[in-house]
Image (cartoon, rainbow, N blue to C red; front, side):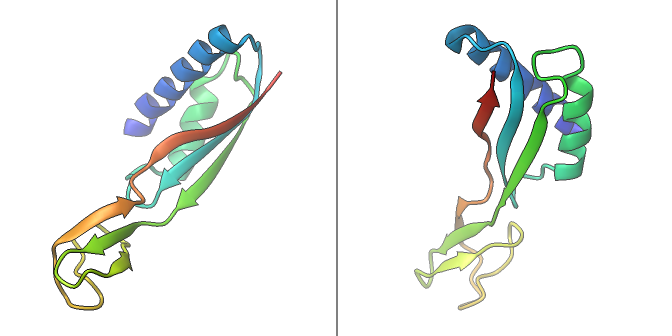
Length: 113
């Protein structure tokens, strides 16, 4: 389960930012999770609760914003929705798709005290 290491990394970021910005408590974390990121939102929530016990983020709310996958088809030049990597272009059937969004996993913002 790579979500455990992802949430451990999130906690390290929170601790680093707490030192830089001077907050002592995290009340809410809003994550942007792309549809193509291979991160399971339910597993992220479970791991976040486990990883943050005893930390400045214990009890914090984790709000996950799902972002759709999009791409650019090289053969026909269309911007398309991408549900899964390696799917063909719905317009021309081509397989040369450059993913432009949907593989993100980033902290959008925080509510802190």
